[in-house]
Image 1 (tube, rainbow, N blue to C red):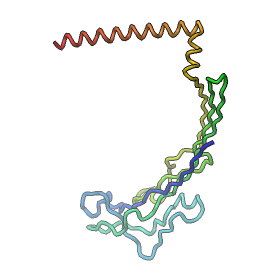
Image 2 (tube, rainbow, N blue to C red):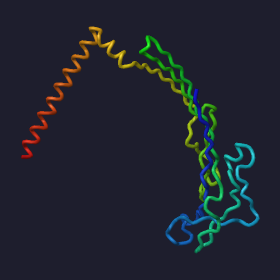
Image 3 (cartoon, helix red, strand yellow):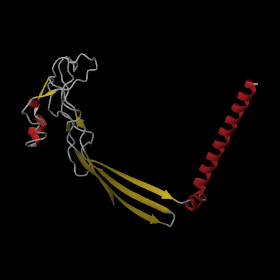
Length: 195
């Protein structure tokens, strides 16, 4: 059995000024930031899940930047929701006839089925400002199984002694030899045309 558990902090959130296409500064960079509203707190991720999905932070704490300014909020002043998930693998190996092996493997991704949320809207004036309307990068629980058969070289030699496999192996050798002859003749033709 093997496993790994991941805890990933959310991405940084920068609040865009929104006015004039994030270009109220007229610098033509389109990356203006919002201004703080004095006396307002950010209230990041407060209340129940349904509450913070609809308003991840206090949207009233921001206002469009004044014309000719870049805005007074900083970069990455908040963090989007973090992501947690665990992956587990279970495998069982069997050996028989000393040369052959079978492995069964069952894998779980996001084994605890933790939800993964996207980032909230961060541009003033947009309909989804402050709202989380999408999912994050980690999908819901996924499971997959695999069955692997393995054998040693000694086992391959033993198998090749059987008449059925012996004929197949000889046919494969003949096909490979014919393919090699075709490749060699093409190389000779290419060399002659280059001269």
